[in-house]
Length: 71
Image 1: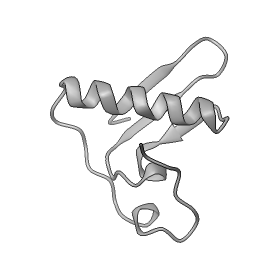
Image 2: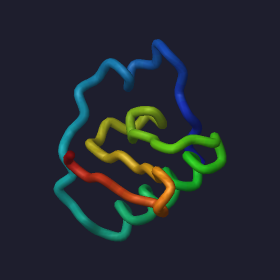
Image 3: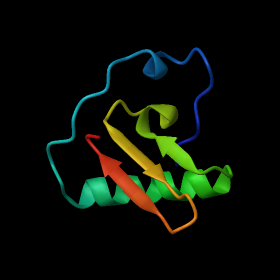
């Protein structure tokens, strides 16, 4: 399972890429991201925060889980 990286980690300084393949792997990744976010606990998590340089962001501002891809 992925863990949240800390300040200074290289992925936090690297430009992320757009997601082009919308498949089961992406679904599994966003599910894992939501689990990490809730366990943190937090209200949002971007893929680079777990070492993955893709333009994906998950969040929950009180109305349930949401996923933003290539925002």
